[in-house]
Image (tube, rainbow, N blue to C red; front, side, top):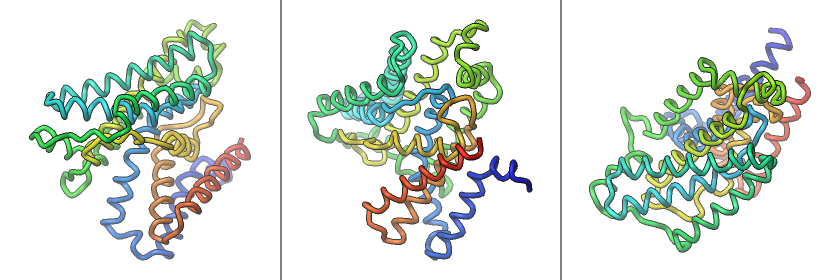
Length: 310
């Protein structure tokens, strides 16, 4: 295998090598219960990262996903606690996430504000809005049959596999299809490669950016629904720092922060690397303080390797 192919599959090779090393350091790592736990814990970040992939492929970034997760989760929990039909509550929460994402896209495309600044502002506003909405306290789901059924989305299992893993698989399958088989996917890569050229060729870059951030908002909202289901309540501080893990997963998967290069399959690998890193450090009883250092070092190395390959 030549150097070019090695660099192309560096994320997968890194995942395999890292997994082998951890399996020697901790015998519990490759056990079925632990692997299912890894996939379950990874699913939340993976779903957010799927939406983040669209954003980064266009050369943007979305720092608001963690706050969108918390706000959407609070909306969903309050609706279910009030007795609303669970399906309607889920649709309403997803719609809220989509609208919030569209607002970010509108501010960026129409207001000509840098994505970093626009989504940083949205992150702060929505975090404050969540604290106001929840009064800084968790919102319980209640004891209705609907609430009990809703809890299965985040904490249930189907055929021995956690339900969130199925959500992750479906989301990535849909995103893969969109990015590889549709015009929207081709336009996403085109804008990330050269936005000005895309605009001059007749592509409506404003509309595309709004759609991309809408997708990111919807998937962040879906993650919020899963987290709320798992915890059986909406926590006002839910999703704090999740945007960083999502960006890390996308970067580790080989997607360029400059846009135009990357794949949704790479993001799957990146999310698994982050998930396995967190899990292995816990198995090895590494302090949470050192875990942050280790995660930052891994991300830095991945970016440096990406720059070197280019």
